[in-house]
Image 1: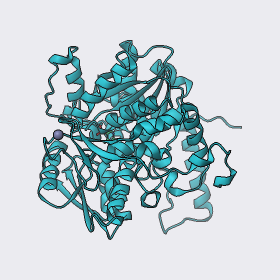
Image 2: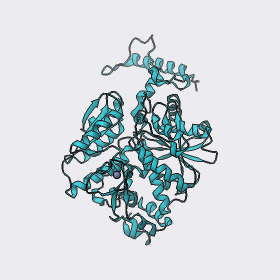
Image 3: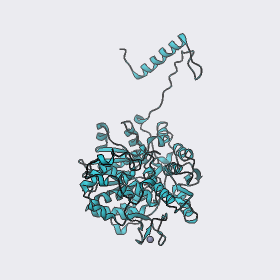
Image 4: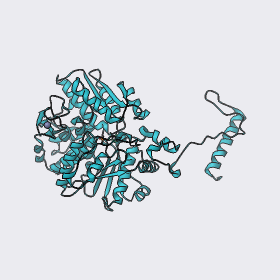
Amino acid sequence: MKVEDFPIEIRPYIIPRQEGRIVYRCLGCGLEYGIEKLLYTCPDCGQVLLIYDLQFDRLKKIPGKLWRSIFDYRKMLTIPALKGIYLYHEFIGPAMPLDCVIYLGEGHTPVIEANSFLQEKAGVRFFFKNDGQNPSASFKDRGMASALSYINFLIKKGHVSDVLAICASTGDTSASAALYASFLQPHVKSAVLLPHKKVTPQQLSQPLGSGASVFEIPGVFDDCMKVVEAMSEKYNVALLNSKNAWRILGQESYSYEIAQNFEYNMKDKTIVLPIGNAGNITAVINGFLKFYEIGIIDSLPKIIGVQSKHANPVYRYYLEPDPKKRKFIPVTVKPSVAQAAMIGNPVSMPRVIYLVDLYNRLAGKKNVFFIEVSEQDIMDWQLVANRNGHIACTHGGESLAGLVEAKKQGIVNNNDIAVVDSTAHALKFSGFQEMYFENRFPAEFEITPDPNLINSPVLIHPKDLKNVPAPGKPIKGDDFKQFVKRVSEEIATRLNLKYR
Ligand SMILES: *Cc1c(COP(=O)(O)O)cnc(C)c1O
Ligand SMILES: [Zn+2]
């Protein structure tokens, strides 16, 4: 639809303007810094940063109702830069010129209601929001679209040239970073650091396919993270981990989309998501806060962060009810099928602490909860979900297991409607499904397959058949007729089929 075709009251706003005053703000000392330089931590005190718009309040001049219409109408535009996360440009990157936006098809992922069988089994009405349906098959693309659009902006402005983007990754960050960086080659090149044997073959294939330099190093993600942090302090590289506040900004789109999907009615809604490095929960909380402040939504949904018992530092932190007595202690992680969240020392912890407190205060009640689940429950719920029409990854299974546990604990009640984050596509983690079906989990995973959930292919090769086709060697005539007859009989017997 063209601008002149929109209602007259929408037209002035339908194409966002480049405005606002964007700064990095330190969560430790509160100092602010301009965005001409890519910063990850406060040059003064070393604490992590968040990005703020000093003129955010100008957005209050537009009533919530009008904002809602602007976003709904904006979906009808065919301008690529506004097709993804920047549909919410005023909230995600008001200073970003549209011609700097990198759009590879991220965002606006489907929200799919579970069938009645699955809702009954879970005991809650819920939807999956499938972030596996992003270009690199995980939610990380939301943040990369933001971070790489910003780098593109710096390049176009002449602030930087020949960028080497680096990241440490549990698999999906590198897949996404490599994809978005490759779109900007030759100006941007990427290098990714992965913990050796701790990412799936599918995830490893992604940065390789995008042409990134891929390094595997001993240890777990937390070790890789220390290396890239040291490198980003010493060398001229652009760090693309969620320490980079531009990533957080882009990932806020997840909340805006949920709001829009439910016609901005957040009453009785619960958002459930897995926590690893805690960038995602930071972004989701911040997104809802911004929409709430401007009056686009009238209430703040409940947020439930889920961790595996094998990587649960955030859960442990909040076990202590008295905020003054809470103390963050990193944990040593154990193997987890929610491998992308297998992180013992989340970089965004200070952001979480700050935002959870603010969120609860604005909601006027405790509105952010933390749940831990077993590896067994993660796998079982993932498999059950996928046997009911979903494409949840193990982390989607983790979220669902967390929702079920939250219901048991009375955190979620019968009126609540949950949106469960499946953060990546099932196919990325199909190796865990295979280990389950073949009962090959090493003991430290603590997973025993439920025979009812196991599935495996059956080879049909009737013994009495002398000749069977092979690639490049078709069979003909009676041999082929016999082959078709005997194979169908055998399948029909196994399926208990009746004659018609
Ligand atoms: C990165 C990732 C997570 C963890 O998200 P954080 O922002 O690190 O908390 C969860 N699931 C998947 C599939 C991921 O790729
Ligand atoms: Zn500081």
